[in-house]
Image (cartoon, rainbow, N blue to C red):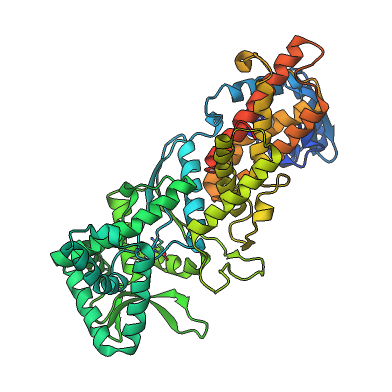
Length: 584
Ligand code: ARG
């Protein structure tokens, strides 16, 4: 919107500046009343310097020229010391709105000119461990970032960087081996015999035993070597374990409406064969120092509090590789093979140092060209009502599957209280959309770096900045259209009330809002926008008659406006991975 106005103004000023060879730089400052379509341009001040004339004089001259364009401006006024206040004309806004709603995606104005290849690394769960609330945030924030970037025309490649290699896997294989062999001997499918809680128990047992028993620790190490050498028998076990574990993970993705599929899986195991070559590349750059037998990179910018240099360990003294080595290798693969222009990692803030180090080493070692953008998207913790990280009563991590089931149950109550005349089957569908939507929305509605308190009551409230509020606003607009046969596809919106003007101005901020989120990767901006838009719609709905207007033209215009707002809310919720029921 700002750009369109700027273009229009520049055009008007073309003659004025032609002889002077100046292209005006438009610098909007605080307008008197943005809700009425007011703009203030601080254009005379910068020009005053160039033209060596009093800024007010320049402002007056420009204001006079602009005022002639009655189709764009309702009023234009020069004010001290050199600002130009202008109010956009309704006819201008109506035309702009018309072209905005004619874009099927509503996002035409923000589409990327040169589509980029963007990798989003998110969810990235660990095999043989149940997904807990900590993984929830990466999964839903990452999914939304992917949807938003994709909506503007870039190519998104989602990568699920599974923790599926190394010591933990060797330990689980050792423990699961006999159960798998037994199932096979009894002609059972081992995948039916195992489940994720069992695998998790194996891992816990093995960790405890390896700590207290050196014989067991040596045995696990032997398994690790065999796994790393890709001995067929171990790879077979490993595959079974991975399948069992991912089976549960996909159930949750499906419930959440997250679009990760097996083709997005590129776990640590995928990079196993490439690790030595990457270590070699880093070595060739002269970056490796041996410290306590381990290959390390020391960079000046990373020091502990006491000033001692912090190493990035590339290869341990026993030849094993570290978390960072896998990430360095993945970075090389992502830029060289997947040809990424931008790579985004979504994990909690505790991994901030890890990614800073990995990015720095990758740049120094030439694994990633300078022009590739590397970004770490961090987030805070989910807290319980006691303001401590969310745990069950017995101190365990809360399991995601249970939490989501509970959310759907609580949402059913809300839906049923609101409208118990809906058919039972439909109520259950809406409960799912609302329950899951509420959990996702509550996670995204505030700055992701803040911790937030998980509360069903708050996230399911029908008022305030919540998913059910937006879903209800959407359903209410849909209900208007159930009462009329009119299809507003080609009716033009004509402004006749202040509520309409305010709503139109807000509506047209949609593409820019989405663009902003695609750049700063903060979905809460889109949530706040949709909430403001719904609130403005609500005051339009309260103060302006829609179906029983004074005349047909006004009715058609208001229905067209309502339809546009419904489309934006639905599209906006869709970008947040949330469904919009038509009836509630
Ligand atoms: N599996 C890791 C964890 O659960 C997250 C991986 C994030 N992605 C990455 N490329 N390091 O902590």
